[in-house]
Amino acid sequence: MKMIRAIVRPEKVDEVADSLETAGFFSLTKLNVIGRGKQKGITVGTVHYDELPKVMLLIVVEDESVEEVTKIISYKAYTGNFGDGKLFISPVEEAYTIRTGLKAL
Image 1 (spheres, rainbow, N blue to C red):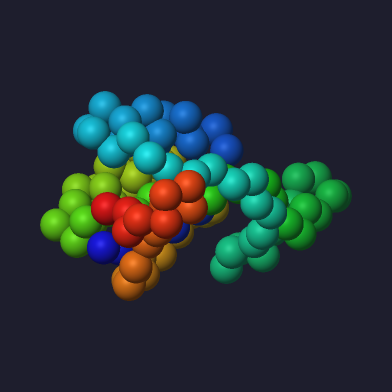
Image 2: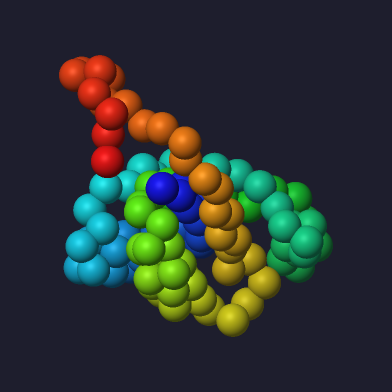
């Protein structure tokens, strides 16, 4: 299993989530986050915004689904501008359902 953490623009999150659901990936977690990337914020006129709002999506999938999920996220979150986001993929050793105590997935 792998955990995919996707940090995307807030205006793209619904499009990404809907596309994942259409492809059969129903379970995900959305978190509103604030941060900055290599562009170190954005300047609008004379005002500099050091940190920008983003949404982090967390989704755990089987190893064979990682490529499909990352393609969906990358395609749907893409605008071609700085700040489109990042994908982080990490191994998941174990997962448990709190209510039952049973191994999940």
